[in-house]
Image (cartoon, rainbow, N blue to C red; front, side):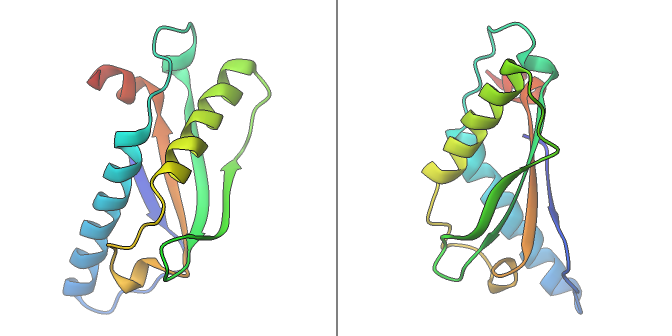
Amino acid sequence: MSAALLTGLFLTTPVQAESLGQGLTRLVGKIQRNWKPDCKRPGVAEVNIVLKFTLAPNGHVSEGPEWVKPRVEPVWVDVAESALAAFKQGEPYTDLPQGLYNVPIEVSFNAHRACARD
């Protein structure tokens, strides 16, 4: 996993930015711990999946998750399904700053990096 991106969010203070950054790190870490792509399968290391979702204040998904720019190759589909499963397994996401709820978030699942950590 590599990155998270917030869209449609305006930060007014450095404290808000730091709090949201720490919250994103916790969110990505929780998903990452659940994500286990099949690293022995040929082609997996080249896959990079981006999921887009919105979380409600109760920590559950209110929109998505959806795979951004889906592909049809079986290895990509399988890695995307494992990323979706890892995301759903982590619900609810209740330990986040309020600024991370009700805004679209994109998380990148980089199989090369995930496989390198194993």
